[in-house]
Length: 213
Ligand SMILES: Cc1cc2nc3c(=O)[nH]c(=O)nc-3n(C[C@H](O)[C@H](O)[C@H](O)COP(=O)(O)O)c2cc1C
Image (tube, rainbow, N blue to C red; front, side, top):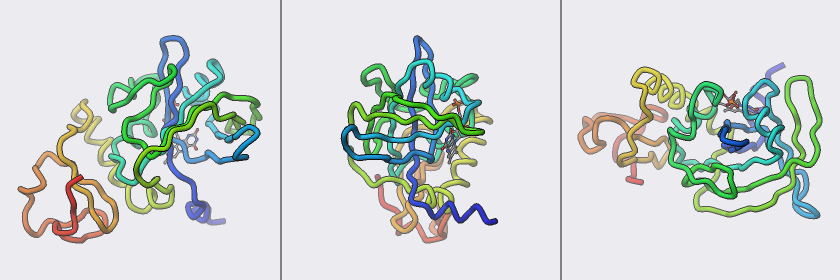
């Protein structure tokens, strides 16, 4: 069995936001599907049972969804997907707003808020059948899970490694995006000062294929 076959399903990648009392949490998910578009619009979120996000959703009964855009900084995936909010203040590391008491990242492709209606416990995950209570369409194209696996995963691991070493999230200076693969450059060296033979770390094209975001 080759489970990479599942990477070709057209999932997106999402930041779930959750709050219970003074506790903020959230994580990256791809296992989120639309079950019905009306009467009422319903989504199914599959959340790992041992995760803090799962615990906070069960306590609060609500969560937000920020749909990640193709231009997302790989650090956002690392921040929400590679560590637990039990031990890290994830939301302090990224620009965000609180809407109706729930955190959401700035610059998402769209935003949805949900209330949990039914929960089915699977072996490893809870399937939260959730009714959409609000939805806002933002700018930008959504990041597809399979494209994350192909073009962004390594950058996310590198960003997390750097974060662990320095203890600070990446500076939010100018960003440059590869027009071929979507990779976002946001390094310590200003893009203009990179050597002429510098190439995109993901797809290998030259500097001339990058556009300032
Ligand atoms: C690309 C990616 C996809 C993920 N998909 C899911 C998912 O669908 N459901 C889930 O519960 N966790 C998923 N995770 C794992 C959680 O994001 C991760 O375990 C996180 O650290 C949990 O943090 P928490 O303890 O603060 O909830 C995914 C992680 C990554 C990097």
